[in-house]
Length: 209
Image (cartoon, rainbow, N blue to C red; front, side):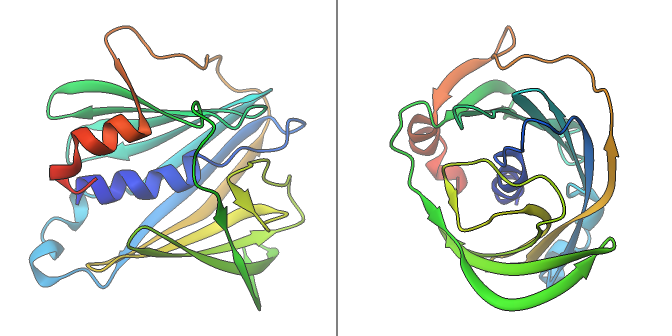
């Protein structure tokens, strides 16, 4: 469950936005189709992601009630690189993506559907990532995604629906605040061990990552 929540956080955290936007976007996270044995732990699952965008760097923070901590993802808007800061079993890791230049490209297929979210008219597109079906509702009325790993989405994601074998996770924009944000850098903090995405996958394969 914890690793699947991390995968879901990566979807928003790896999105890089147009450089003329500075501010904070808040996404609420909800869950559907949870198995009966997981209902008791629903309150311990992540329920919010905040994405702060400043110049060429963005920072997403997803709360993790189960561990009492946060999953933080730093993204470089120019290069498309990202770094995920996580605490796994008491150890701190900075997991990089896009550094090697051989990440698999993700292509979305347009459904032709339209949906309104937070007052914005959205288009709907979908794809598959590992064992999950992903549906994205995005609008052209906000700054477009700038990410080489995401093709076909010329807009801003207002909702992402992730269908897993054991649940459906929904991340929807609840607030958009344009303005100054705190200073942060694209670098691993002291005490974090840096791993590539491939190294992390091999190291944590037993945990379902």
